[in-house]
Amino acid sequence: MRRILSVLYKEFLQIRRDRMTLGLLFMLPMVQLLLFGYAIQTEVKHIPTVVFDQSLSRESRDLLNSFSASGYFDVRYVVNGYDDVNRFIDSGKAKVGIVFPPDFANNVNRGTPASVQVLVDASDNMVANQAIAVANSIGLLKSQETLARKFRFAVMPYDVRVRPWYNPDGITAYYMVPAILGIVVTMTMVIVTSMGIVRERERGTLEQLMVTPIKSHELMIGKILPYIALGYIQITVALLVGVLVFHVPIRGSLVELYLLTLFFITASLGLGIFISNIAKTQMQAMQMAFFVMLPSILLSGFMFPREAMPRLIYYIGNLIPLTYYLDIIRGIVLKGIGFSYLAGQVISLLVFSLVLLTVSTLKFKKKIA
Image 1 (cartoon, rainbow, N blue to C red):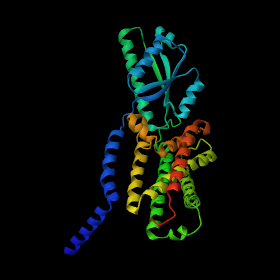
Image 2 (cartoon, rainbow, N blue to C red; image 1 turned 120 degrees about the horizontal axis):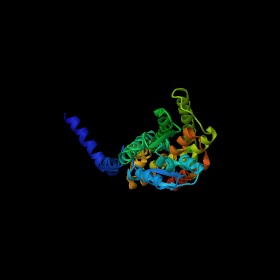
Image 3 (tube, one colour; image 1 turned 90 degrees about the vertical axis):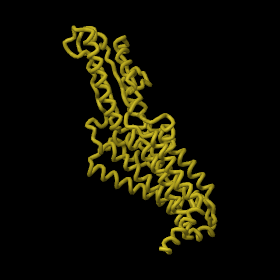
């Protein structure tokens, strides 16, 4: 018993001396609890919506006000053509499109069903299910309200026709498999890279490189190239499994997907190398890596819709590389869109890569820490 107590005492002293590890053990769980407690919401409200009103009548504005007043639809864009509606939904700027036909007001006044088309981006299942349910409910409630005022209607006055795009059957695998691919790459690039470099430093295997005339950026390039190749191998295997096992359709260009994935891999590698420059032990590197992984899973839109998050948490999600890669891979795989729609996400990942790799290279010292 005394030997056990002696070992426990020595271990406690070791942890106490390592103030950085002690701080991470106590601070990171508290930060994560507060952050995720506010961030995780399953009820999606304020869904970005684009409207094409060909009727431009009091009746169409009245129904549109019902959509806005529900709190679930935020009318952010008003356009003048179907092509504009398609463009906003394809780019992800809008998750819902509402289209009023030219004869909408005439049909309402004649007592015949007035149809309105609601287009829903079903590449995000949780947002799509919420939008479809609420849109149908609004059409039903508005019809009942009109029937209570006017008894001349023999049928429901409002015919809300919901059209889910990209994943009309709501198959979960179509939505989740591409996202899981991003999670797998993030885990490899961040956790394995950060711990691998710290482990080499602890074991002293970097000593041989320290005494060579190789420059810091050359050493950094030599370190990240194998992980880039590993990332592409993982992506290829995951795509094959997704297509052959889960029958996930790939509607876009595979060449474009592989090219744009490079920016995500380098951004994730930069994050892992940055952690390895800060951490002194493998324990610290693991704690920091998991501190990065949890926000990547919970705040990027992988599990919970970002539209449901508070504004501050939403902006914090913009600091996560996976947030942009989910738009890229879901856009190419499910929507079939290309670089013209994803330029913003690519530029963001490029900035992440340049900043993180530059800082890591400058911080990297050719000496034993």
